[in-house]
Length: 281
Ligand code: C2E
Ligand code: CA
Ligand code: CA
Ligand code: CA
Image (cartoon, rainbow, N blue to C red; front, side, top):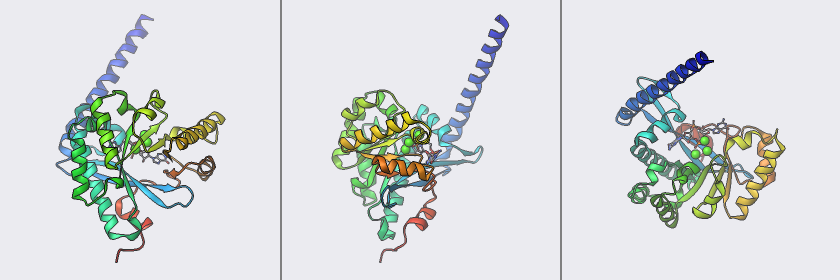
């Protein structure tokens, strides 16, 4: 038993060492990636349940590293959050997404009402200059605050950082929309609903995936939607992959859909080709 214990300890150490090494390697490559212009954004449609109309697009970052190839955001975003690199990276994402939205709105009549949804990390929101940064980026692109949705997770709100909450309130007062992302996967979810000035709840795709197989899940989703609606929130279902899921969710009163059943995240030219026909005169 002693021997097995030692082996386990050894395996654990190796696993930990590998994780630390990987994180250091990613961190090193990330530091050069912005200057080398290795990042790009893809945009996933968020559609109205009843009509299928495109209401919002979520900007999702992609990284093609010269040394590592494609690296998934699930791997490098946590590393960038750890090092604080998420602050300049997040600012680049916001700038690029706003630039793209302004370009679409100018080029296509049918893009005039489109909103852009952007993921924001705690480090960004905890910055005293964040509100001014957002205002400056919106103004530089000729966008009203209403055109922007900031997506944050419950993890961001755990800290109960007063700067984060002040920034969120200030942004909300300006007219920027705030969405709670991955809803249902964090801790004590319900306390945020009264504390944070939210517009939108995005139900995590783990609930949507089990809609057809778990009665408990169906009940839960039904009640999340009913609760959100009664609070005046907009409900987005993430990770909708089948027609059956979409049908169930429509029946439950869900407002908006995002998922592979409708569209994968797309490069900007492909999104425009699929959703915007009429050029502006
Ligand atoms: P998220 O914000 O929850 O974004 C949704 C993720 O679900 C995206 O993964 C999207 O491609 C994926 N997805 C969409 N529809 C479906 C579906 O029907 N089925 C399945 N299985 N997946 C679907 P992605 O692009 O790999 O991003 C992963 C996470 O990385 C994001 O999760 C977000 O937390 C983070 N992330 C991405 N871009 C940014 C960014 O610019 N800033 C920050 N801070 N985080 C980002
Ligand atoms: Ca998101
Ligand atoms: Ca999400
Ligand atoms: Ca997620």
